[in-house]
Image (tube, rainbow, N blue to C red):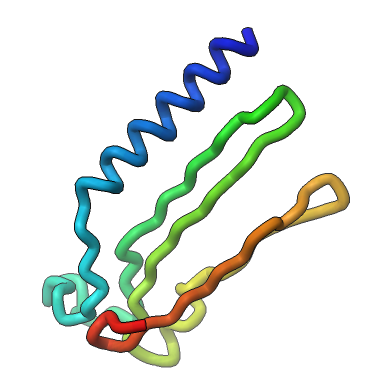
Length: 104
């Protein structure tokens, strides 16, 4: 059973990594199609969640989210929130910001 879980998680991670590696992300806000910008406060451009089962009692969740905010009303759409409790720990938290041209 443990080997099946390991194999499934490995398959998911490798599949995600190969898809992710093939994409060249352009963070420039001008590359967003005009039909997505009409009456929009923000556009979610990427929302990836990778769940890795390390052991039967240890699970790692990695969230990668890219949101382009057009105005102040769109700030709520960033959704930079992660839940935790006494049995859950957040090990690493990064929240990078870029300019309209996609520069850090």
